[in-house]
Length: 214
Image (cartoon, rainbow, N blue to C red):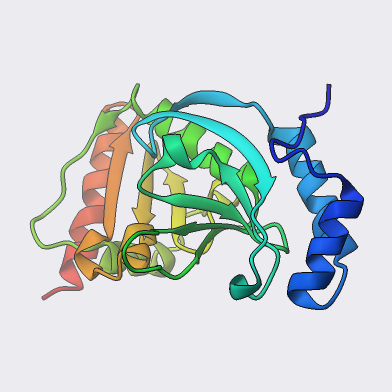
């Protein structure tokens, strides 16, 4: 059964709001909202990314100050302190609202990518975490992954999140919180191995990445 809009607003009411706030009626954005409600609305699971259970509740949050139609994507009460939005083009963006209104940071190209990333986080709990050299930052690790042409897991990657996998190890590098909180030290990375040979390959990769710092 299609997910019911928590705001109870009809398509016509939302079109009126779009016209009032933005001066146009964006039927494409409205169609994306309804499609997201049908596809994701009511989905609940434990998210390793957020560290607790999340509830998908796409609903419009139109405000003239935003400059474009924006919808909540994950219930803010369970994603707190982050706001997780779906922008007019379907991109999933994170924001840190509060005493200062933070910028909306594009993170994933779609809701599917966010869910795929969560699935990888969950699967990695069954793999072995591999520790790397001190001082090896996310930017350096990302550059090394690209330079060494690790296969990018595009289905789970986005603008600030990236996953790679090769030779029995899996690498995740995130610039999301560094962008959201405007704090470079929030960038991070992790690497996991699926067995002894994967651990050896992961350590070899990290050694080569660390060599860039010399």
